[in-house]
Image (tube, rainbow, N blue to C red; front, side, top):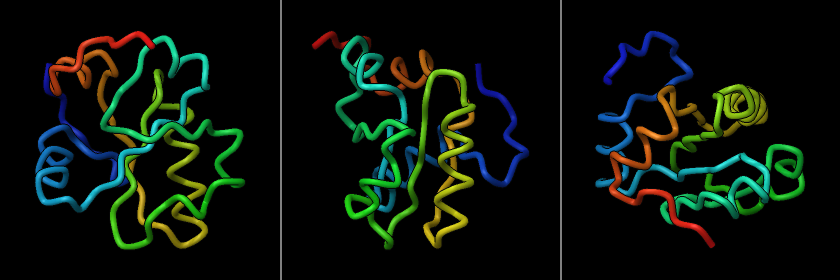
Length: 110
């Protein structure tokens, strides 16, 4: 299941867990509200990619922002955007289902 992460904009599960334990990461779900309603991750804040620029005030500048979505495309876009405007961001470079199992949250329907 564990894949090697070579992209400097990606963060691996072990690195993510370490930062969560140290309270040095803000986990950002950039999926749509509908996707978030179907499968909710309580450890993350949901701001859809299309609304991100309207909610920048919700994002910390003193922590890494780890973004995720279903396919990594939107999270990669969000990471690139956030880094371009002065935030420190990486996207979770592994499978969303693996992320749910890793945190033992499963799929929590709202």
